Image (cartoon, rainbow, N blue to C red; front, side, top):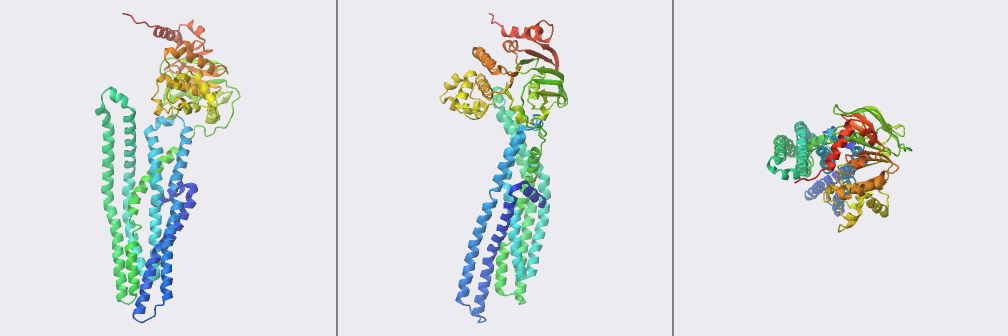
Length: 583
């Protein structure tokens, strides 16, 4: 338990000083809690001495004792308040810091990280796990450390009255510690099961909610609910098993403390009968025995929680300590934007996707990448934006290996429009403004007009202030795509990557959007992944991929003259785009 407390203390970093200051306030609070008992016992002894004529009780002594009593009570609440002021908010502050840190970390890791870690697990870490630490981390430190401070402060008072009684109290603490040690072993063994069951619960719930449309479409609510029901049952059973093992050790811990309390009274009575202690001091010991162990009894609950926190920190640190993809990158401002692939190879989980690919995209030209599904088209775009690092070869922009450039510097020069568009749960205006947060309102509207989405936005009740649902699900596919194009237009980056950017557009607006994209890409280095002939045939260069390799390279006209993959592709596309209904 001590190691876990030390780990939490190290984890809170710059807030350690406030935590230690809280311990100091806790000590003085404990002194103020013990003093009224001491003052009461001392006052009782003075009254007994006065009653038996041993010593006259003076009025000023009574007022002095009353003053000390009031001061100790007031002091107790002052130090309790001060402790709360410096300690209580640490959990919230450090959790906010680590959430921001994780956000920066996730922004700078390879996309392969998200393939190795399920989204449900990452979501659980950033939300559930950090919230658990936020609510329980500092609280458990307070329960353990301040609990022992309270008890050992009272033991110091016992040393002053009768050292033997202090040793009896210490014996009770030692006996309870043995049970706590056994409880910690039990909790350590079960903490991983508990955490795993919680992650399964979150993942199963997310999967169920995300797949709701498919579930309803195939009318398979029963089958689809099986995973989430199993996760619920597993979570319930794990918690029951933990509680069953927890009960026995918890009872042993509390019983040791209660027996120590009873033994204190018996020993104090023994000293009184042998005239080694006055009756008033025995009264003090009796009062102490009722309260001195109250603060350490909850430590049995804290022990289990601390083990869970320890596992939680393992997971959080594994994410925070993930190697950045641009860890050794430099802040380089690109002056020119010629892109060169030099013998690039890349694999997903040892499965080759791109193999020895070399080509150059001159600055200010457009290159279309075509090929069958799975040939590596999107992967090339992801490698260009350094979502992944190449395994062999190099990608150079302006003659500079992108592996030496910080992601922020690299991505500031690239605008991407994906086939699968994601819009934030925010206003349409802010979704477009995401491309350039410093843009003016006029610039946002102009970008929307170029992307042919201004008219449909104005037809909405709240116009640009319309708040989109999560992922933009309240809009059609074409509408979402046009907003994403507006976002890219507003960014005005010198390199444009369009990954099937016109795939979801309706035929009525395709010509207008094509014109908008031509304005967007004019004079810029552009990579286009597309299947539509109108998009491909105007490209300055066409790269034809097949099985991760370059099968052909050239212009639309030159490739049509070759009897290869491209001409076959064009024939299929022409047949698909010129189909007719027959009766």
